[in-house]
Length: 134
Length: 498
Image (cartoon, each protein chain N blue to C red):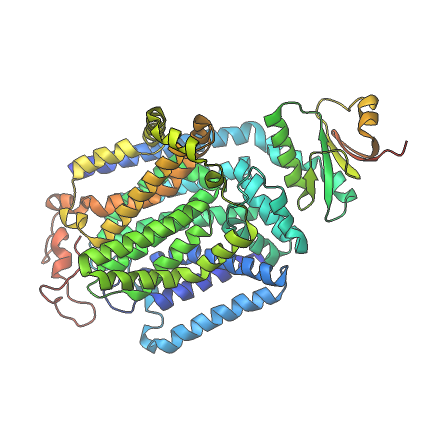
């Protein structure tokens, strides 16, 4: 009897844990992912146009409008993941800079101050800058 | 089409190595499932190490690598066939999971496979929702795999951008993924998920089949159910984190050590394989380096105390021989490629002492460990299970259990102290890593636990009618005839106790 009780205890709690997780993930899939795709794939797709314009290797600048440190770190890591094996540095002094904007395009004065010149707009807030000659 | 050789070659390589080193004495339990699950993990791990060594030497992947792997497989298979009698060549195909033990009651089997099917379904939904895995998977492991695969000669540039993402971690997971991508010539996002479910299933079947072999079938199935019952295990497998990989190697090392200790004779092949598994843990994550040293120390000490210093040293030498090839790669990686380990590099004498003397840190860490164990793992359930079924006292003195439990305890204490002394914000460090750390230890814990706890069949035996003309189920094994010689096993021999 004790053996049955022990086995049933392990079985029921394991089944509860597995079924809860399954239900939760299935609901998430049916509600969101089925229609929109997953968040990281969507983020990666934004960089497809830029990826085609860049060489297969090299080091490039990165410029974003995200002010929060943690959010900016996550956005840059995602951009790095999307563009690997290109290497991104968070500075605007390199000859080519990847722009990643979520709240709108930066003001012309800010671009002038950083010496950036728009060279390609991939849409969805993703652009390439070259160094301005003026 | 290239996907099949990418997956099958390492498994076959692993199977050839495991079969070659599996001792030939009749007493070694060795079901196809046990060998197969070991082959998936050990083969994939060794293929990852081989792939990384190739990249280091040749600079980038070339077709020659397929020839190297295929040649190695042929060599191992050739040695296997040349050193075995023809009658023994395919004996493993017919070997039972647990020869001589009564068949498990149907509800153990049905429950295990039911929970397994639901867990696989949960894994699939988790993977559909996050095909790139969790943060650490895409930002660290899969990013490195992309550099290995797409970066060509420039792959080392990955070290310049891993600032906050453990650039010192070894390359087992990226090696497994990038190797498969290289075979396929493209980098579909499904490959890391396939590798993860491979390791998840290998861990489940290794735990189940090893306990079936050592303790009896129902014990193995209950352990498998408990492993899957901790939802963190399946969640982290689907997150493509290295913690499920390293958990497999921890488990493989203690399972092989326990099987090696089970017999009366020294089982050298299994001891060598245990060393290889421990070294592959070191090739997975930094925690594996700690595991390798603690595991070697535990095996040596247990052997030395029970059989004398000479036996201890012999065991150490055999395990070190198994670990050596992969350990050399880890050493090269650590000394030539990787920066210093952040947790160690950030420690400063005065601050470290202050943290060690701060009792509130011990309380915070203990509280976090307890909360995680209670809510996210089935620890209270296991405690009740232990109370209900009791302990097999002979087992508690067994060398296999002692090695497994000593390594587990030492790992647990080490992790505890890493948190106490961490220079990172303690709450943040616990919150971002404790679950994963416990996932690493969960399979090894369950193996040690079910080695110790009494077998349900033995308690159910009084409730089961004996088959006509045969002994009661619980005693049937002792009455069985020796499979080879057709005789009773010799009285007083050191047969396995269940």
